[in-house]
Length: 167
Image (cartoon, rainbow, N blue to C red; front, side):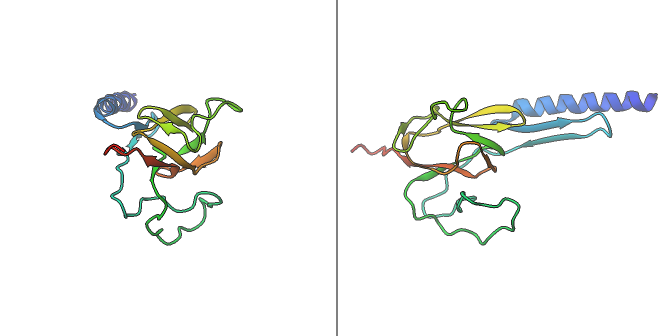
């Protein structure tokens, strides 16, 4: 029984370390997994997306519609000539454009959005995660259909950032 007690103590210590680490994470936490059998602890998160400098390719800027996630990866996509920037999925899950089936979508093409405004929901592990805009701009294109699975970093929509220079 001493092995089980030591294992439980180890798992409790790992759990406390997981809580300490989660408290220090500045971005959204993606996953923590603590298991009792074989004493497994997994912590996974990602860095907040950083806008790519103009003219450089972003990960996942290839076509979205009809993409086969199980197929082999294609060649790297060239820099996207379309105007604006993409808003990437911050996690893997299912993307929803509205709060409920048949509900009014959070955003539409041509709509002006502001920082903090919800642009969609990604469901991951039965949790509904609101995705908020991080800047002001106009929605140019919706790149993911309602109910479609998304990968981390996959573009959700294309946004024309508002000009800060006045005009």
